[in-house]
Image (cartoon, rainbow, N blue to C red; front, top):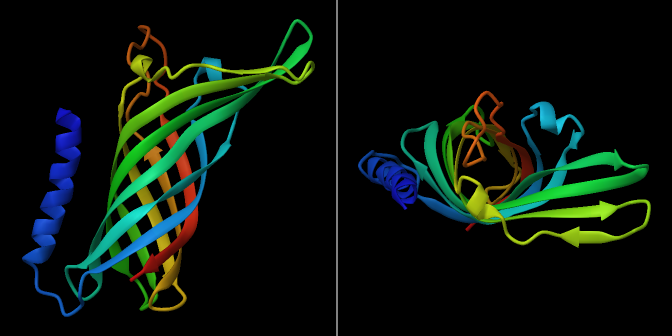
Length: 208
């Protein structure tokens, strides 16, 4: 809960700062949605890892703070995780780790061109669920684990870098890479490598 309050406090601070800064442009609100291509940083147990396709979507506010700069806090539902393939006793298996988060990115944007912006900033993530799906590709049998988020850190912190281009004043294409900085495991064995979320996002944004 303290981490949730911290993330919301940073967002609130950004809003307060923006409101006290003079700018000729009004605050714009919008919605965005797109595709996630996520993975988990590798350690010795993740050699067969593959990227997983997921979804992200939510709302944002774009707050100009200067002629070429703005702050964009967002509230998104975002699907993270990874896939893997392996063989046991001659049978081929595929597995999918599905980690669902409520994320709060706070992006600081620079308008390099009138319709093109570059961005960077922190992302605060709060885990909603964590499930594994395993399928025996040889027999076709599959199973899904119960939610195991109690075994993981429910708070995730990352740094995002991205860009966007607005084709019209209201419709834009967005792209962002978020590198996780926190270990997803709650109890990490001594001497083992941390496993972190990584995701590339691409999608569309609509300003009202």
